[in-house]
Amino acid sequence: MGIVEVVKKLEETNDEQKLNLEQLHEQFEDLRKDERYANLPMNELEDLFLNYLKTWIKTNSEIIQLLEN
Image (cartoon, rainbow, N blue to C red):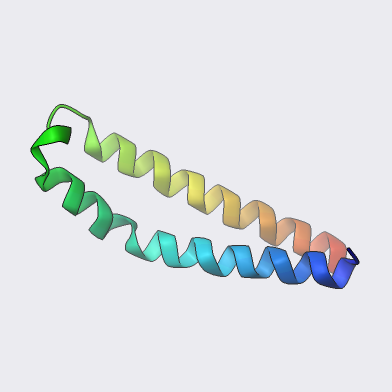
């Protein structure tokens, strides 16, 4: 796989993760309504996933920048 293909894959992954990031709060709102998850610390879990997705996107962006230079 060449650099162009790698950059394209990373950009596609970033687009998917940005969409997940936009939908994250709604997904956790649905989980909060589910009694099976009543004892879980949903705010902390949501923050964890939020930071995970942001880190993933940031890392991919840094790799893209390195590959393009």
